[in-house]
Image (cartoon, rainbow, N blue to C red; front, top):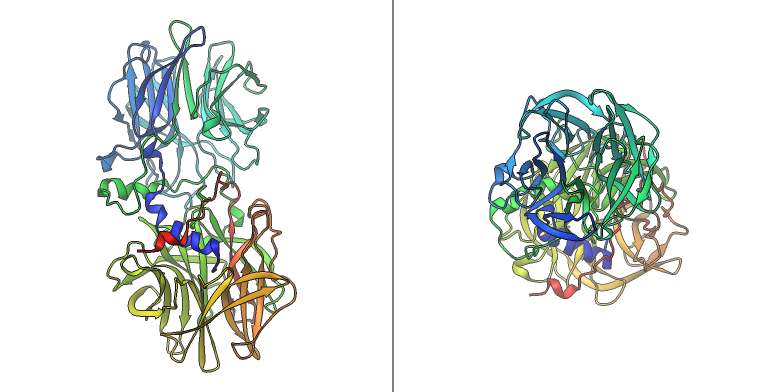
Length: 632
């Protein structure tokens, strides 16, 4: 846990997410494309995204979008509608739509698509999900009907879904008496495949063959029909690639056509009265992200819990997730975010071994958007897994607990309460858990007191959930990150990242397991590869500590182990404990595995919870913050 990546996780996981970019920093831009192809910007819908536009039977235009008002918490992340009577030159103020009859527990509709009907009504197709996160159900397409475009009534049932897969952000066009629904298949690596379904009544859809388009283009956008052809307005790879257009006579076979040079993502479009085109599209970020040390009003901070919306395609199939028990205090998000560091793009998974040396993957996900795990197994055989979570209920980047009573098949998630810290900005992070013989939970954390360099702190708890600060546990001559502790005989040993030189591990010892004295840093090498210590466990004759390599660019992370009888002389175990060869659908190819947490179950099996990167969360540049960012 203690390398350059660990430093990035501390900085990005504990500090940077308070300044994360979000959809509230983007606008929806309205462009007019003349019949000759000239592009003109007409308007901007501030703090908005995921737009759709259509022409009503009375000639007016209606646009709908996700709405993020700055000082209106009640309407934050709702769908709003706007109207134009002059072909898009001017627009009414946003009106948050009302939807009557939503099923109990359903999240407010998002990702709108509007389809005017021949009888003058408007149908809203939207992504529906039970609860605020994607953990409780699999998102699918639902609908509602309206006479005025603002007040809707929910139409019971699912319009379109795929078992075990997340279906979001659909486009629907009414073409020659048939409704064609297209939604991106987010599990493809190239993104150029989409689901296709048709319906006679707009309510009961039948899936047909998937649609496909050449190149790295996504079926993320909107569709319109002129009676002869359906035109799809889609998103290129990355919003900077801009708009693409394709036409089809049957909704199945598509041909790319020339498109205007408009940048952005998730476009909608409608033909203007003069034969041109009106395009609504989500912009790149247009306003500065709040600095980490800025104090934002509660109305700006609180709604951020709604924005851990996963990168499309990064959620694994439902069969790979461990069960979330009904008594959980929160439900983890599924899928990851494409950010440089921190827990948001990471995934915690399970491997087991009969001897602690040869581990096999179980292809079972404990949680997404989690990292830096540590665990203990109590006398009952219960697994207490502590980890850094991108979100814990309403909170961002906090330490969380996952408790399993059935050897990891199912988990109960709890928020961890920390009291006694003078200031928790940034929050204490990087948990290391120890359970004493008398039932005391000792949770060690990384924290920079009053802006000083981060070191290790001790908290204690009797229930494993509510922890109280005891004091500073380990303060070597330099920053200490991600503490890892094990007891050997009468001596406790602590290791932490951030030693005086590259690939060094801080090492300290203690008699009481609460305060540690620093010894000289140690370097660990397995198979000629420098390693960072992660977690240790007592084994017959000594201690085995699990570690991972500080991977260089182009090299994957792998998990190794070291053995000691005295805590001073260490020997690298031969081979690799867990290699970077997991399923590409579950672990990002080329990234590998790291941060192993180890425990022994009641039947003697060794359980490993390890960290990997979620496929699809790659970013253009993974910024590695400097250690100086933590200094006063």
